[in-house]
Length: 440
Image 1 (cartoon, rainbow, N blue to C red):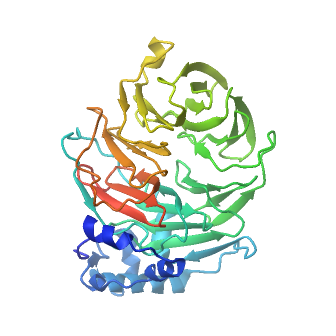
Image 2 (image 1 turned 90 degrees about the horizontal axis):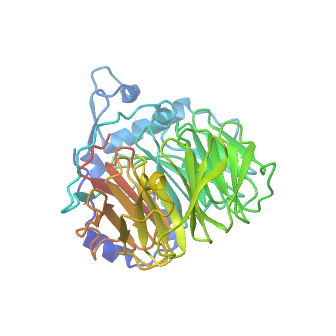
Image 3 (image 1 turned 30 degrees about the vertical axis):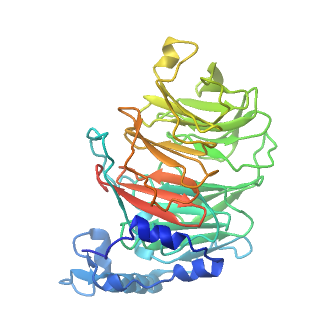
């Protein structure tokens, strides 16, 4: 079941050096892979694929046959969506079977117990680009995996949300939705995976119900006038959406009703927010260089302290196990703290300061078991590093000088960390396999 060799770091580095026009990017999205005929896919082993068989005995299809069956299934059962308003957005469903998988996969992926991650060298392999079936016509602003399925979303200033079924070989495009009035700054799944929230530099935002195939426009938030809702974070418990407002305000909205709940007020301008793993606390940082810890039961700030060093913090990230939180700065320094220190001192000190980046830290995320912290900066080419959290050291075997990262704008780990997706300024999402972790 080999789809042919993935591009090597050197080959792709040379390819990336040639500038592409939007027309060329569009053309490359429709390429035909000769290796699809060599790829073999079993449509009998998985219940969700059995509908593609023409006989009960049929089992293995080539990659090309697989795509043809998906198109046939699409033409047979796909009606024009009643919700599609041509004046606002256009939808294009390209892989109906996978779209149905997405709409019915709550709990599809099984959580597996993590093993200790070796620190010496990261086991990582380059795969086919995650969005090779539909490159973006702009910088990738958002990359995020579905919480319960091997599905990836991408979005950007080309106003288009795209969904891909990730297998590391074909990475079929499931669907694309074009929002005519929204250059997308951020797109994110809700914790259950049944909705996608999309926002930009506008007073409104969108909610796309994946299961029902419905799109809702939320025209502003009562209780707080905001000119831009471009940055937000959804609480892991699914209760709230926290928007970064102006003048130091954090605007809390009910994730269920999309109605205003409360305002939280910082002293400086809000730079970044993130939730604790259980949704009990919200953390924020701003221009006053202070870290705030907000209690969601009381809607009050329960602790405030300065980020060590006063390096003008730009982003905060909390680990999925609640063991750590990290603050990245405009100078590229990342301070890593133990969460337990919040209870023992009024001025927590970082357990480690990572100094491998030299420009403003713009993206930062822990993987699912908090053994890896990814950090990146879009201000300089190839500014991306992975931190081995048990040893607090940066992996030195990757990326290499030949890794074609370009300007990294967004990245994400898959639910079990088997995949790492990295979106760049060329509209491409590079896909890597992390060998230590299972795919599903």
